[in-house]
Image (cartoon, rainbow over all chains, first blue to last red; front, side, top):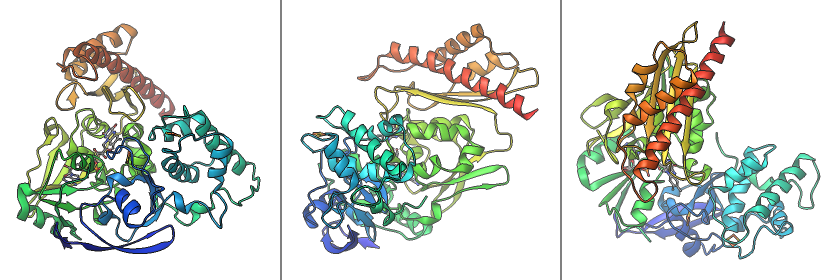
Amino acid sequence: MQVKREERYSLRLQVNGKRYEEQVEPRKLLSDFLREDCGLTGTHVGCEHGVCGACTVLVDGRAVRSCLILAIQAEGADITTVEGLAQGGKPHPLQEAFSECHALQCGFCTPGILMSSVEFLQTHADPGKEEIADMLSGHLCRCTGYKGIVEAVQQVADRRKEGEKHESGDPVSICSRTAPTV
Amino acid sequence: MKPAAFDYLRPSTVEEACQYLQEYGEEGKLIAGGQSLVPILNMRLSTPECLIDISGLEELKYIREEGDWLHIGALTRQRDVERSALVREKTPLLAEALPYIGHMQTRNRGTFGGSLVHADPTAEIPLSLLALQAAVVIQSAEETREVNVEDFFITYLTTDLMPNEMLREVKIPTGSIPKGYSFQEYSRKHGDFALVAAACVLDVDEQERIASVRLTLGGVDAVPVLAREVEGLILGEKLTDSLLLEAGRAAAADIDPEGDLHASREYRLHLAEVFAARVLETAYHRAVLGKGSAT
Ligand SMILES: Cc1cc2nc3c(=O)[nH]c(=O)nc-3n(C[C@@H](O)[C@H](O)[C@H](O)COP(=O)(O)OP(=O)(O)OC[C@H]3O[C@@H](n4cnc5c(N)ncnc54)[C@H](O)[C@@H]3O)c2cc1C
Ligand code: FES
Ligand code: FES
């Protein structure tokens, strides 16, 4: 397959369960595609070189930097952004926990952290604080000091462990749709 | 911060990728996981005419053992190598090194081969592979050749690869797996590039004397460095506290780091001495324990 620089490629992929087909230049970043072409501005853009984590989304179930992927590279992929977390008008358990634990102030970093946390909780049955901090090393938050974020993620993990049925059901139900292939 | 315009090519086989490389030469740039290349493109430090996207080539995503070699396909994601039971069993050094690379979110995308070809002198994968005496398989439209990792790195961000060549796979010998191993590094903040990194594989004999050792240091020169002096000093010896100190000094005597924004020359020398001793100590203890459990 070849696309010339001035050409627009007809790109098909799926975001939050919805199919999109948009015309893109080869150089368009996935982060810009999500924001500009899909109108999903929940994915934030901070540094555009992979350091801050604000742009993190799930591509085929895995948390990755959308500023370090060309949109054209994601052809056929199944993408989940922060807009895809709430189900049936109810916030995702992580979103509720973030609210309860004061895990956000300005909220700029939050969408990226939520997406990483979704994958993290799916791959860690019983995470400790250390592991949560390790996952958060890929995200910069200039407001909270991280304490509330660690607590929020821990809370969702603990509730899941206790088998406590939280209001919005299975705490990580979103993940089952996009199980990562390991 | 957006990349300059480029033509985009997506080959569906390795052969097709090699043909594109042959055709485009210096103008064509391979993109694998993009975790090093896309930041460079975004900042326009590089403006290639054409990007050749190999990230989807499934045929180069594998980890398998054949005879006395572990083969890892160049496009295997770093996260998959990190989580592989086979890697943990056969090359525990690699399994220990991988979590130090960037973050979970970059390892989900970054490839094993991409890190090797990017050839950052502090990078964890090159340093580990140098300790493990690995070889790389290189392919072009004209030939396939094999090079020892020891001869692969030329200088800062430069390898033995010609513009028409690509990395196909990495081969790690697993014939006699050293029982002792350790990877440790120092960075300002978890996930940052290391200031200094050290890797060591080591075996002991029945009397707990060092039978074989390879110690490598990163962040101390333009390429990862094998600390040969250490080998001469400690082979055949039991590791005592005084020998450990001496070995650390010997490792630091081998190198000539440059100071930069992140660390002065003196600080890097200090870190090299400390971390060489730390990986040696850990690897030795693991080797001795391993011997104990095997007999
Ligand atoms: C925030 C952040 C932190 C990081 N921290 C670290 C760290 O601590 N340690 C570390 O080692 N790295 C680190 N990296 C970089 C690392 O994650 C990259 O994954 C890796 O260096 C490159 O792999 P890639 O597959 O992404 O390659 P790409 O970015 O796609 O390519 C890198 C280079 O290799 C070439 N290339 C790739 N594959 C092949 C191939 N098969 N044959 C020939 N040429 C090829 C490309 O043309 C390009 O020149 C970090 C990156 C980020 C964004
Ligand atoms: S905007 Fe992508 S990591 Fe900062
Ligand atoms: S809440 Fe403001 S940056 Fe994290």
